[in-house]
Image (cartoon, rainbow, N blue to C red; front, side, top):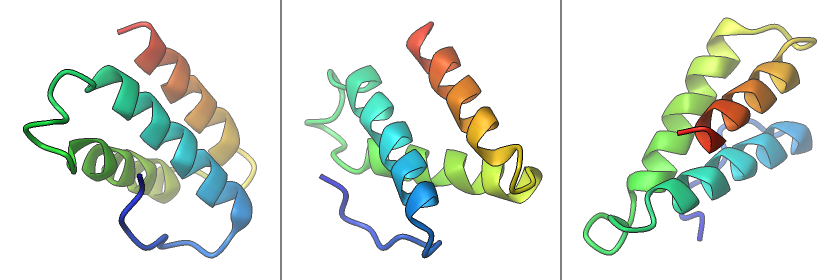
Length: 73
């Protein structure tokens, strides 16, 4: 479950962050019992990096691209 405050008030950003978080939960399923905040920390870090480096028009596409990359890990 997400246990942090969203830094951006926009619903589309919240949805993208939730998607990142859900993918990290799946990726880190084996290590989450030892470090329960790992997925949320990585999702926040990844989203902040993307948010800082993209424009409004490219943000969604970059998130989707990162999700595809995460699925292929």
